[in-house]
Image (tube, rainbow, N blue to C red):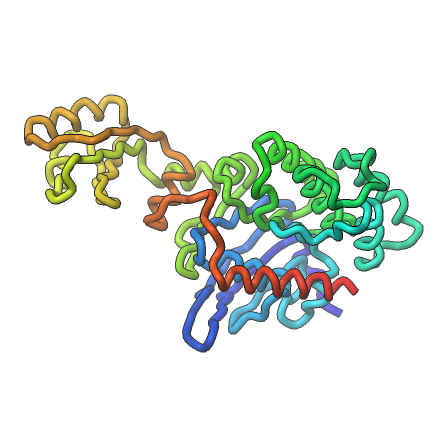
Length: 342
């Protein structure tokens, strides 16, 4: 039997996954998630986040490195890990041809919930997720928001120590996303669950996560609390967009007092400064005096969007599709997770 030390924690130690002997999808990733923490895992398409989550949830074997989840060694005891964790995928895993109640009863049986507790747990979750009135309707008749809440109920019916949420609110409207997170927070407070989440909505990560890691090209490039990551930007960001892109204006912009740094990005120039409002007129004046025509100027306060751009060189796109590798991993881990419950 696996040890019980580190209950509620998630630990990755030099976790690596190599495909076809040459593609390093995840390259020596290490981090620790404390019990009861909400940990955000962000990255561009193909960065390695889906593969990392698949390894942590025992849906995909690692090439090297180690991982423990809820105190259990994932590589040595994958079936035990599957029994201890809850997962809500972006793909629907509940059965549309069963009612909401039947989906919960099936999940309870597969996860080994004591029979004497099944009825009360199912009833309580149906009420909490506000699907009690539709409990005996087929799940395929549910709205998108109702179906996501049912998925959350199915993923937590066995009171897991660690809950993995992979793009859980993708496709929901803002009201539906807010409602989903309200239930997650309630479950977390009452049961002390650790929550490991990937999301395409940076405002969710900013508002919900205690700490965040950003992965790019298989490496973690930044981690910390949302506030720490934003503070690392060093101030406001002014974006200068010249009309013509054939002339490098970075040297000119660096001469303006108050500029901390200048970085070229897709024909634009990202200027770091401590007081953007005061600096914008000076930047515009410097460009005008040097006869540099401007197509646009914008000012942004530190945000996770800017953090993401700073550390990956790419904007975070909510509509970005998944890669072929991600799709294969997603399909395999759903099959493995369902198989692990039986």
